[in-house]
Amino acid sequence: MVIGAGPAGLATAIALRRAGFGVEVRERAAEPRSGNGLTLWPNGLRALDAIGAGAAVRAGALPAPGTSMRSKTGRSLYEVSGPVMDTIGGRGAGMHRKDLLDALTGVLGERPVFGARCVGVRTEAGRAVAEFADGTEARADLVVGADGIRSSVRAGIGLAEPLRYAGFTVWRATIEFELPPFPGVLSMGGPNQFGIWRLPAGRVYWFASAPAVEGASESRPPGFFENWHAPIPELLAATESEEITATDIYDSEPLRAWSAARVVLAGDAAHPSMPNMGQGTSQAFEDAAVLADCLDGGAGIEPALMEYERRRRRRARAAWSQARMLARIGGWRNPLACLLREKLMSAAPERAQLRQLERLFTFHPKSGE
Ligand SMILES: Cc1cc2nc3c(=O)[nH]c(=O)nc-3n(C[C@H](O)[C@H](O)[C@H](O)COP(=O)(O)OP(=O)(O)OC[C@H]3O[C@@H](n4cnc5c(N)ncnc54)[C@H](O)[C@@H]3O)c2cc1C
Image (cartoon, rainbow, N blue to C red; front, side, top):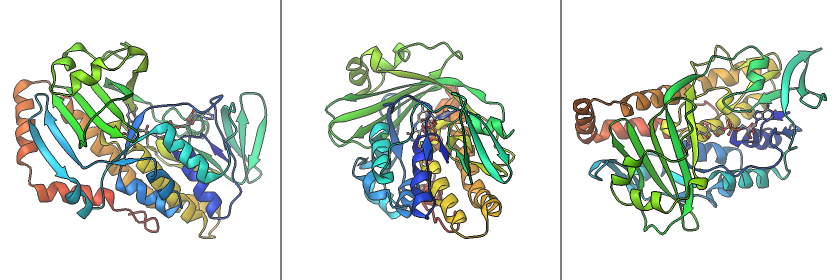
């Protein structure tokens, strides 16, 4: 049984079913939620290929003709063109979360059970038991907690690390907007960032991040973004406040373990990370492919869960720490430090940067590397 019908839960269900296991997905929300745009990276797409979901997802994604880091005035600090991305594993792609979840549900061939909030888990007589808010229980050989960064399943098996507020909020929106072919852009100014990704069907996904008091819940990003380079002011002007979602950002220290007896974690539940690498769903898809491969090995469930964690921990930790590092550097406020940051970005040896990306993008489900 899989708890949570987000990217991790649906991909895990697909992977387990493909490996021959019966799977049911139960989701807290009463119905599918829309969400926002996101970026997908070659390692995530490769993991989806391994579980037979790559083509369906690619059909709803728009590969970017390169990626670009810019100053707030639009000066290019670092660019990687699409053809160069192709030599290191492939291009990043923009996709709407709803389209992603629809594509995964289509591959699974069955809608999750909605309105099922898991409130506890335990292992009893060698079987996992999931408890739900309506007082019902369900027994299964295995429960996969794919219930996100505030996972109840993780809390239920005593593996929760406290979430730590990162000190900034991210505002996001997906709007209809005419934009010519455009790389995926991240622009930086002081401790603030603005990202732009084109999505299929004439839509653009933008996000703005800035330091904010935890829980302040301002409905729009701070006004200074309106003075940043084009098309940032135009995107902001074209977006109604009701179209914007504001999210305070958290992560936690890496967990002590990813499973206990017949209960295992996947996606954000297993590795709560900041979004600065845009790797959350890609890492979740790696979890799904590796977990199914380990369970398919016939070694028995509990040894398979140990093997899953062994294969996945290093890569998930690398993405987690790179995201923390980017958040830290991106949060610099001192103008001299920010100038230095721009100089370092422009001057960093391209080969070293590409090698680092290539390592991230290269994923083999068998080894987990
Ligand atoms: C601002 C921001 C920007 C991001 N941008 C990107 C990006 O560009 N690219 C990218 O790859 N990632 C991005 N991420 C990260 C990405 O959203 C997550 O990594 C990804 O959604 C993780 O998938 P998941 O299935 O593990 O968790 P979730 O997407 O959180 O899904 C968990 C599911 O479980 C359900 N659930 C929760 N509790 C229960 C319960 N008790 N019982 C039953 N169901 C439950 C939830 O309703 C939800 O449907 C971003 C995150 C943020 C905050």
